[in-house]
Image 1 (spheres, rainbow, N blue to C red):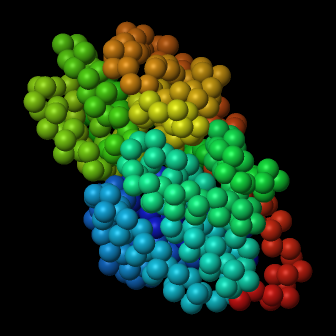
Image 2 (cartoon, helix red, strand yellow):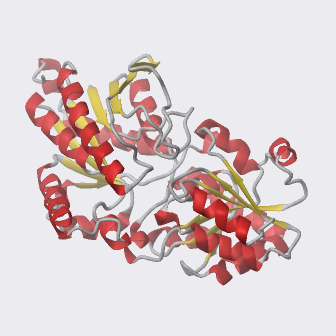
Length: 412
């Protein structure tokens, strides 16, 4: 098959962020398929250009085409919107130029690029696979990011339109099913391919000594937050938790990443005189193993809005794969995963005192923390491995594109 993935914020292993799509594409290529990815040349975390090349062959059969984008996804709402719609237009023309496409894979968020994926698929006579990673625009509405009634209405109409017209809908969390059905998606079209991780990327036995020495973390209990520093991530609550623990010399909070809210967070930590908080820039995905090895627990936190209880966040599975206990300030389906695995401690979202108590509890009992981490590693190896998820994705794609059709060349 020739699979066309339209994904504005696609992340390579050399970039910071989640590499789910690279890992999937790599395995599809290894199985003999061709994957072309239409992406932005800019990082969604930093807003900086990640490459000067218009086309990159990451490996034989896996090519990334960089489309023209105005604006930036990590700036104001206006400029994010400009970025989304300029990519929507440029990726449409790049998509039409691709030869003999069997399947077009659109992924949300952002939602506008999925409309492009649908239109390219229909014009080229290809199948349209719609992957939902987060529930947009619902998240944006609950967060108050999307306020204009007309824009809300247009976004909801587009969402329902795409759900109804997709040949298949892939979700990465079971929590999304009810929302999709309420918005017009047919149950028979919805396929769950859960979020997860490549456990081989992480070494639970590594102590991360070099990283600790480099950043003044030797002999400290390191509570790590790794990821985007945005409105959704509720990191002001994490700073409040650090303030509760600033007189405990054992504990350091390490925040690795970037985003729109990072300057405000750094300023707040300075004003509060939080010497127990360390900010570091984002690191490439292939370097995250060293960062996680230097941690003693991983913090996953989102704002306390009901819809976030539907998510399977990437970072939770990374922490578990690294053999580190999770301090989870998110309710819902991911809490069930962590608690059933006995892989960490869940606290109420938005509660800084509870978050601080959970971190202190792990620091007080490092042996119990290590056992939690080991249980988490075991669970992701058995149930959330990227290798199995890639096989599930390939099986779905093969079902969508019968062999007879592929051999007969009935694609544009």
